[in-house]
Amino acid sequence: MHPVLFLQAAAPGPSPVGTLFMFGSIFAIFYFLVIRPQGKQRKEHETKVMGIKKGDQVVTAGGIVGEVVHIAQGQKDGQAQATMGDHITIKSAESRLVVVRSRIAAVGGEDLQA
Image (tube, rainbow, N blue to C red; front, side, top):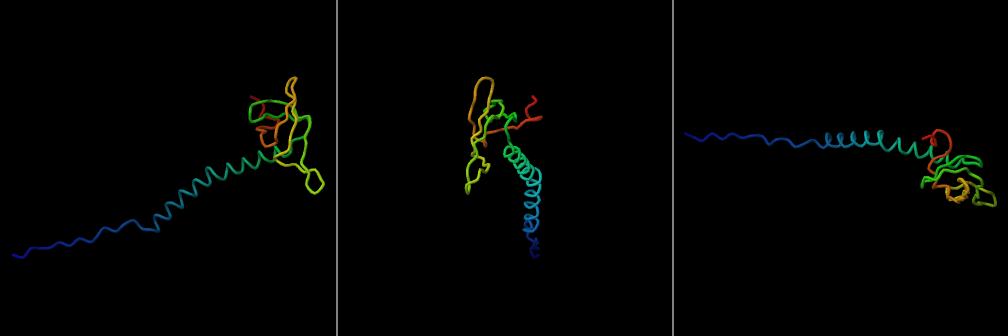
């Protein structure tokens, strides 16, 4: 009697196209749920901070609430231009503080209602 040899086909590995599709799908979900909304929120905050004017109520990153009394803008080509490095003087109670514009966490409105 001859031994019967059973040959089995090697099991196919995962398809590279399927793997790429899976990673692409995960990246797309991550982008639309995390990266895009965060970028949009950052742009809105930057727009609010760049639009600060005298009399606005602000909250600093350190939690100090105050009213803007002076804005010292930088100079570019001989004209005043708002930058994130501008010094903003705020009045909080009986104190006046100088804060860099980029350290403003919230500007007026509902952000200050807590």
